[in-house]
Amino acid sequence: MIDKREFYINGAWVSPLAGRDCEVIDPSTEEACATISLGGTDDSNAAVAAAKAAFESWSQIDPETRLGYVKKIRDIYVERAEDMAQAISLEMGAPIDMARSSQMTAGTWHIDNFITAFKDFKFLRPLGDHAPNDRIAMEPIGVVGLITPWNWPMNQVTLKAIPALLAGCTMVLKPSEIAPLSSIVFAEIIDAAGVPAGVFNMVNGDGLGVGTDLSTHADVEMISFTGSARAGAAISKAAADTFKRVCLELGGKGANVIFADADDKAVTRGVRHCFNNTGQSCNAPTRMLVERSVYDQTIEKAIEVAGKTKVATAHQPGNHIGPVVSAAQYEKIQGYIQKGIDEGARLVAGGVGRPEGLNRGYFVRPTIFADVSNDMTIAREEIFGPVLSIIPFDSEEQAVAIANDTPYGLTNYVQSQDGAKRNRMARKLRSGMVEMNGQSRGAGAPFGGVKASGRAREGGVWGLEEFLEAKAISGWDSAAE
Ligand code: NAD
Image 1 (cartoon, rainbow, N blue to C red):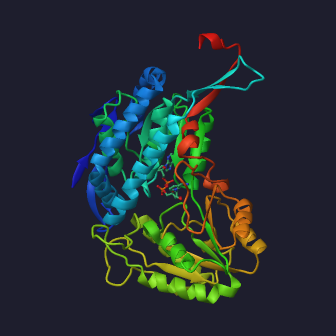
Image 2 (spheres, rainbow, N blue to C red):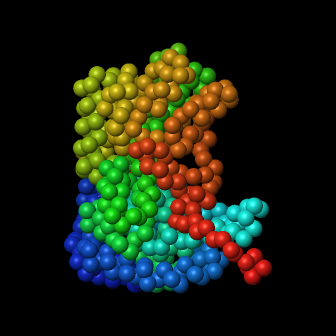
Image 3 (cartoon, rainbow, N blue to C red):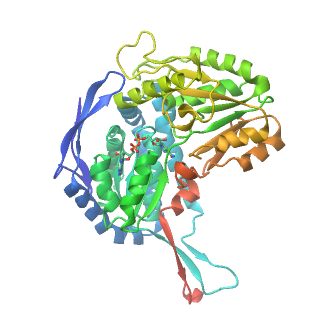
């Protein structure tokens, strides 16, 4: 049982000023695996004050020095890789092999991509030949609040903390209270890298407590948030009175458009992708849109893949999927599966209840619905579990219309061997990202969405720019530069 009730504030682990105990539940066993403290307003204020005090010097030092710290963080992150994977697996139920190969490595991937993006990054830029005495200075926005979810914990923390550090911002991280253990390891890494006191602070807490404190604090200039649309909207409102920049990465209901000429691995790939991380990914392709001429055979294939998807405890090695994160998520997903049945979708795999042989832990049966219409609840709302909806279509235009008929717009997917059709689809789909034929985004591509998926762009150059403000300067003396 881990006991970590301290916060990392001003370069030291400190006891809460106003904390209350909170248990972290291992979703594989439903038993407490750690005790943390949820901070109160005094803790939030102490962390913001430390970040504010550190801002002047951190924002002014040579950017190369900041890069040096990030490189040290990367080295120590790699040394602590196994601790990180174990923490993630325990707190949110990612099977240990997957925690090592995907969850933990997402952090290294982002740190590397930011280091690459930073190499050619210009903090002082000319406006153009027409205005030789103008400069655009890219300046750190100030103290930033980073609020993260539980589903890809280090993916999200590194997507925020690393560019904030490189940009010259100081920060307070509030990780998910459901999955705080990996962020505690992350804070230890920052500490071991010798990042100056106050630059990075971490306070555990819940949304209504520390989350709201940060969103309303007059000395916090920006909130970078990843999580649900509900919380994203609440943060935007809470932040309005202090005119913060609010960057939101929210949910998704991605369409995966399978044309009749898709490659023969497309269906298997799509089902596995939907079930990956036990369906708990904002960019999961949860609506499979299938061209009518291959509809029946696609359903058969999807059933076969669901049947081969093993479900087991996160502590066991192997390529199975683990539990969902919490009792609340388990109940919510069960409700959606029942709703799909009630609204008349055809259940072809899985269903309500736990998989056979598992009577403890938040395990969900890999579930597929066919004959889903896009106005059913299971096609409209983010389920965040291993549940796939299959929807038929008759034409390219209809596929685009169904794909775009959603409140969300994060990632859409297209499977076709016709390049011209793929290119047309890529431009017509309303989403921040389009991935086709199983090819994922390249290093440094921006991650983000449109509509209810939020409008942030994280990663690479775009991710750095989120933490900067453009200052327009005229009358600059280039001779004195
Ligand atoms: P959540 O919104 O419940 O919580 C996310 C974080 O916000 C937590 O740290 C929580 O404590 C905090 N929070 C909650 N209410 C708040 C409030 N009113 N004010 C301030 N902070 C508040 O989400 P979750 O259940 O942890 O994560 C799942 C959600 O995250 C899904 O909707 C998923 O799609 C989304 N997500 C989006 C992306 C993306 O990049 N677009 C990535 C991963 C997850």
